[in-house]
Image 1 (cartoon, rainbow, N blue to C red):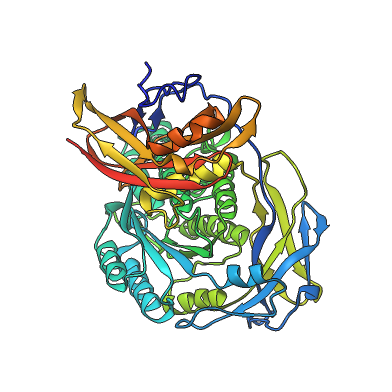
Image 2: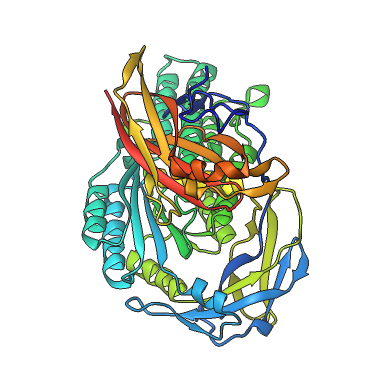
Length: 564
């Protein structure tokens, strides 16, 4: 069905459709988009932050543009902008030897820090230490213009503090994160399987089960826990990806610090390995225990790589604290079963995933428990001493990820930087900014956009909420054409909730053609149109963006809708 426009004579060729979004369930109605005036990838330069260290770990300072080489997909690219940034925790960045004024201004912008705590897997004792180190980092290393956000995750996002400069709000959020716990964090999937498998072995030794039935009972438990581990890890990666989008539109240094204990690159490998060893003394020949997890690890690694590419696409460096602890199966049993290093293998598997994510984005990962304050000191050093480079990429209309290689001519130095970037259309970039506006209000809006909501009505288990969006026609830039003047805007909307649930992003391009003598009348009245949202009960966060298709200016608005 069509929803009426307030000024149909102006839009005689285009009628807005009725919009339906179902928040949290990730559903949005498909609408036929009208032809846009502009659809292109527009990338003038690619910015790359680079940390250079000696083999000892000491920061290398004083390098110049001539000391670096940049390659895109293996092909050398000329460095167009260069600056060395050095700062302390209380003063703005000091930019030395910038090659252009634009490089200097880009490097001196504030920093945005996302503190992401995986409460589901993190042991409570370790979490307490991590949170304390985060609080000290906020007090001693954050500059006045820095912003931080605190997120807790326990199989669902809990945004405890949106991006803010207020230290009190950040501390309150960290305190709350330290109080969120999960029963799952008290034992590993391996430890939970061990209990069930040892019970099966005891039943076999007592004559209550045959070796085959006991083994199948054990493998069933292993498969269930492996599948659950895979689901949980994908949920964690999805939550991280949502939060990476909140960085879009922020011009400055962007960092995500993840504290967690579990992100396997090959879910279930160690569990099945341990189970097979457990039953080897009892099963031989064709009946030998040789079960394998269904997940080969290839799909999991692709999911991990996708998050790394997303971080690079948004210019976010990831630092990861893999703070796992060893757990043992605690069960009264006559069967003595050595661990044979299996728990160590499991922790190493997660460490590999953590290190892959961090290395791909130019950060680092640590998997040793101890003084986490030293870890945050190392993160602070990265933020306070680095090089900002920029280069012009090769022209293309393809959206594929491109490899970035930065190296110094002195091969004795170690270089850390993001390993890729992905070209995006302007619509894709704008969609990310609309999503970011859900969780962090847009700091830059070229013109005002207003949202009005009406009383919701029930529709089964959901609620239908009419909305009206309006903005000034002065935001529209026109181009002269044969018919008179031509322009347009794109209406973009997304809905989320505080837990990180996210709808699809909906775009509606609207073209405008008027006669030149009609422009004055057109500019006199706000542009208004209506849409209808279908929402699940609870708190829903609505984000709307209007993009001028010619001038590329943008306006944003957000609203909280309590659907009861």
